[in-house]
Length: 297
Image 1 (cartoon, rainbow, N blue to C red):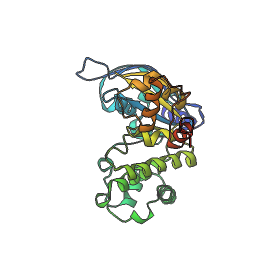
Image 2: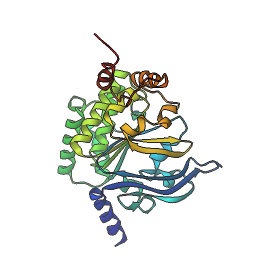
Image 3: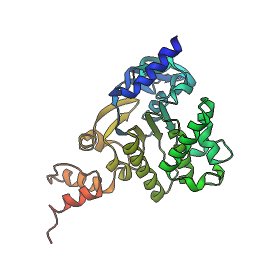
Image 4: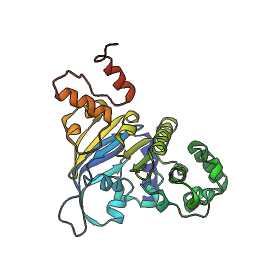
């Protein structure tokens, strides 16, 4: 009866407005004295595209590992507080069962690909869950169409480019129909043009599937125009969580040692010189509109 109860709560997660909740959560890795995560208190609503930003070592990857139970189930250590997905404590359900609610794609997709061809790769997780063959076929078709990899189905993952591998990793996760998609530096190994295509694909997925997407990403110029909210981390703490517009105009964001977009930095410097800038731009079109105030033709 307990397992049925837990499964029912996971299903109900699909209908909660507050999908992810950290409650006074602390965590340090085994053998470490310093906390990787220090008193995390955030609530992430459903159907949002959220950027997780921070300097190297700020705790972003550790926070991500909490969302599918890897912390503390796979990475043992000291922790207190709780992490809830749709009201379910992540320590009360297995990592395998959490994978149907939270799907995670890491920086190097090759580490996630194990099957002999792309079609088998997408089917692998579904088969392990004991899903009927007809449903598996339907899920494969849907995820393949969404990620636009029909031409790759019979190729081996290891002969694909980095961008193609990332699409296959996404397709295999989407086939499980998670409510939450989490990505840890998904474009870190890709060239800028391919990275832009992957990020635009994520925007398409978020809009079409109504998913919550949480992404840790350093290519600010590409990702900022796409997201709704930003979570800022520093030294294992969440130092801010708000709408994109509020965050990028905050001193905390400006002062972070991260790669700010060129246009953003330009207007930030103008503001430092005493020029009135009402808000900093998050995209090139916004920047061009602001430039009209300074350029006379």
